[in-house]
Amino acid sequence: MPTPDSSVDRVEPEDAGGGARVGRRVVLSMLGLGVVGTLFGAGVQSGLARGLAAAEGRASHGLAGLIPGSDRFRIYTVTGGFPEVSDEDYRLSVTGMVRHPLTLTLEELRALPPTSLTHTFQCVTGWQVPDVHWRGVRLGDLLDLAEPTSGATALHFTSYDGLYTESLTLEQARTRDILVAYDMLGAPVTREHGGPVRLYVAPMYGYKSAKWLKGIQVVDRVEPGFWEQNGYPVNAWIGSTSGLGGIL
Image (cartoon, rainbow, N blue to C red):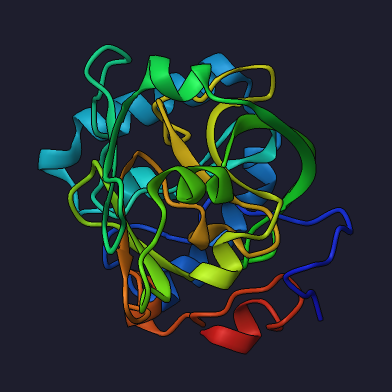
């Protein structure tokens, strides 16, 4: 079982979050599209994602989240669309039980000491993408700047989509291979993949890696995230569940 201190190459998912409140049986049935996801190029993937997001009003929530993506990624969203946040308008807040609350622009994030990671990206539903390169700021470094106060034990993450949330304990958050990521595969994180900035939690399954990261709140207890409120494990170390059979 993976541990917080393990440095072994990890399998990290895009997001095990399927469509917005799409039932578990639907998620299971959509796994049949997995092979299609290996065939789409980046341009096709982006076009399909945008087209389905545009049709959000005519379809049930979460359909955009079931599109197979490029490079064997599958693109997931819990709202049926992708929030638009420009690089210029992007702000990340670090608030709650901290001595120094932060509000950082994308430019300010990029000016902080960067960290690069290359890991296999593993989804809890079974698919994976090997050798994904990420670049960003270590979450632990941001916490050092904000300085959590006595009694703080956990983090609560929010998304620009207005619905998705996630959680980590402070101990987990200081694992060295957790990034607030702004680059992916040698380029800025795309809107479909959760840009301008997303969380990347390398040692855990992908639903922990919240997209369109908006806020990091330091709190005194773990608050289960979106998918954890729908039956997924709060502690999602890769290898600690048996995939779909272990959590659905």
